[in-house]
Image 1 (cartoon, one colour):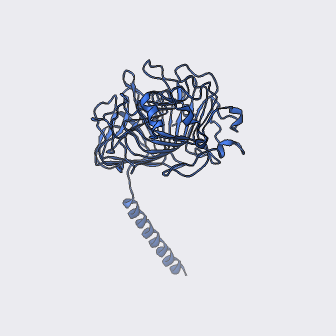
Image 2 (cartoon, rainbow, N blue to C red):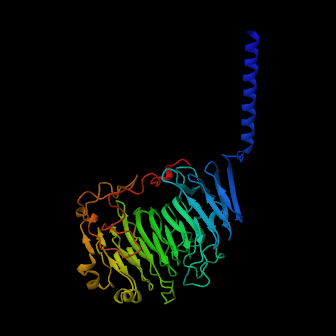
Image 3 (cartoon, rainbow, N blue to C red):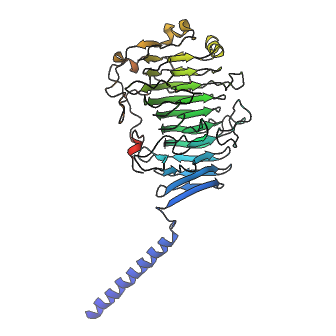
Length: 441
């Protein structure tokens, strides 16, 4: 009997050793790359590279993703920008960025300063450059003044930015030449831009320098200068945009002012081709409670021969100049000649909804469904829609005119009749952040 137990014991011991040996072999086949590191990134990325969520990344100076290389960023990754070196991430034409976060794990670009001490302009921002058409040659980004972009490939693909936050950028590379939160230069329609938030940036939230890229679900939150800036021939479609302004934060430069939209064909208002003719639909612009700084100007400042179109969009707040501004004869003629369109627009809370210069009879034609000088109290906005702190309230109350007052949208947009960025769904939930100053990264 004892011999039987001894045989059984030796057999079990042999099996255990076999299992242990198999486990050790499996471990040797696994990826043993260290995780949880603090990594400093500088210079050029010249081959396919992946940034992992387990690590923390610090950008120093101009960081370039060179043509032919793809930078992939895992969901949940946090990337910080160094203040002293004016860190900026630049995706060159021919390169790609695949930054595809999720609702639960957005990708965050933010300041390297501790919470409570962050500020506008703590670092540069994110710049994506492509090979789609622009109307300026050579086209370079101000401040850096080196990298060129643009070409003839309207379908160019620079990658994916989805569920991404960009915070506290906008450092001045030169006097009065700050970088935008997200700069898109000559970016083509093969690129995906969806669910992107730019917060507390020291210049524009989003600027489109030419290109054909389409975008959806954009948030511009408490930025300094303009929120959506379009020029150099941008011709893409943008749908569902939320703009929220702090009344105390506006651009103090003598050469500029702060608007929800600012749009030019180019700096001189020339006839350069392709003409800036982007289309926007379902955009909400709000100024938080309080008296706006005098450097605010208009909800829409469209000028210098721009031909952009805007549909089913809302402006609420005391913009000092007014709501709708067509700024020069060439821009006004574009509207008269039918090069652009404005339908389903609602303006409330400002003393001058239409700034002089627009063809008011055409703008107010009943078929356009535009509403000027609406009382804020009649809009059916939720309590807290313009709260100065915390997360604003987004969804219109049941029965709100904003849910049904929209015009028919042109092809290229999701069909709806809502005015503004929200109907019955809060598409910011989970991934957006309305208090980045106090977030521990």
